[in-house]
Image 1 (tube, one colour):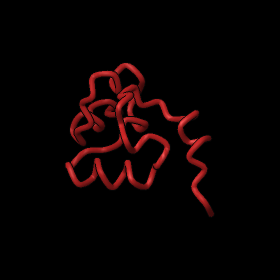
Image 2: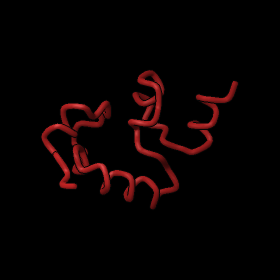
Image 3: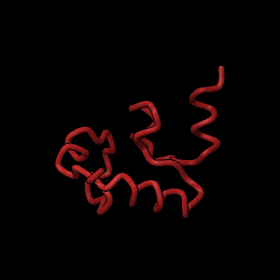
Image 4: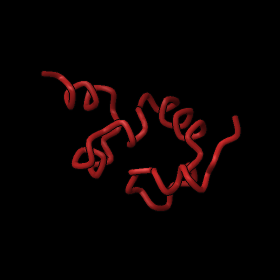
Length: 64
């Protein structure tokens, strides 16, 4: 399956505009994981805007 970068960019909720990984999901995941983070698309919009991509923040978002 080929990556559809144009469609991925259209669907990407990340608000960090100068991101060189936007639309390249595999690169985005690899980049954030190398920093011990998760990509912004996994967070609720109000949290994504804080740019806190930490795993702890992700868990806190979905802990009930």
